[in-house]
Image 1 (cartoon, rainbow, N blue to C red):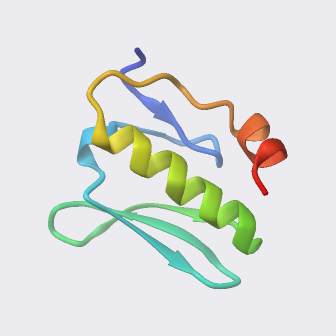
Image 2: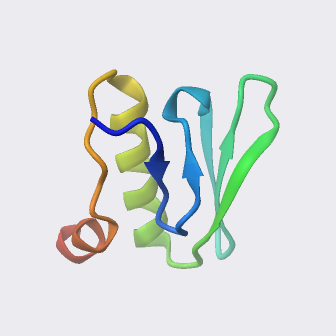
Length: 79
């Protein structure tokens, strides 16, 4: 289990701080905190990759014990 999550853009974040994830078509994915403030923004225009980012982050924030995702492997294997 890692303590800091390495995002697909290379930034680090504590997963327990993420309270919302929002996709912006043709722009990217925003990670929001409990006050609806943006913690980080992942610039990703591809809708499929946005969907993968949201799915992986949703899995991580639901559990206490998580493993660092291999983002390139996630992007390569998802439909």
